Length: 396
Image (tube, rainbow, N blue to C red):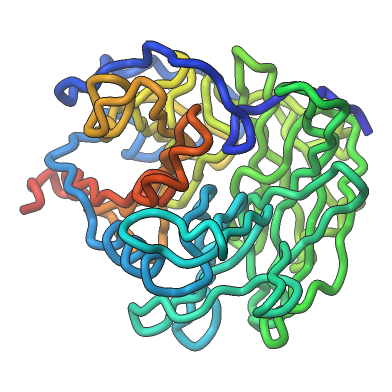
């Protein structure tokens, strides 16, 4: 397998003060022209841009804030993928996680811990449990370090129809020295988690001949699971897609890769389907086509959450439409802090429909210690974005 070893900005990295993008009014960009491509199909969704009629903060932001203040375990984290399990349960998947108790809006440092991944369970609209490895007294990451100076961050998840196995994309990172940027992505894997015991059953390395992190999004559709990833080249991040039949995502020998015109077993032929995505994004069936939602990475540390539409899971993805601007970002944001940045937005389809999209994103700071002084920073944010319904009527 290839190793690109390009550092990805995450909570573990600290930088000096940056002049980030300011927050302004929501604008609608001119739709991109459709590009020809095999398998594009036809649909009404991609023939015109989405019309955004509103974007409002969602109550889930305060729900997670309250849980972080009172759980005595999970205080805050990033990634924020969700998977709908059986019996009305949702698993919220997180990467770097701050643990401990909160006192007057700050982390009680006597109880503080940081682990690289965790899960918070929701049932009946209530967050009720934090799943980690180790014990309640000595919590550890669910997917522990694969080696010294290495760790796993979580990507998207997919639960098999029986509800027993939860497959989670894992990205392994290795530290190579003491410096701030002496760490990099090594490869991706699929972790299999038993949802009855919450025990790890196996971790399967993805031995593929490309530099794609195959963890951005997993979507079951018409008997096939599509696996979306990102080729993170630093300044340029490109989306890729593979597919697998059957239920076991870890069977990489069954994967097929989109080469720009057809599916192939040759992973080295995987071709990009869209530029300027984030490391995390979503691709979901929407109306009579597909909706891709991502943080716009064409501008570094952007505050723009955008959508693209397509008639096929492989694209072409067109009609770039701004959905919202993250109000926390940069010196003109709600924190008034140039160190604050936002990232990794995506849709939660089980809480969305054809007229309203539940979107989450993460907030972080380049002043690492500030997430302990102000626990509100390092927590997921949720917004409900309203778009015109299929008949052209504006949603209220």
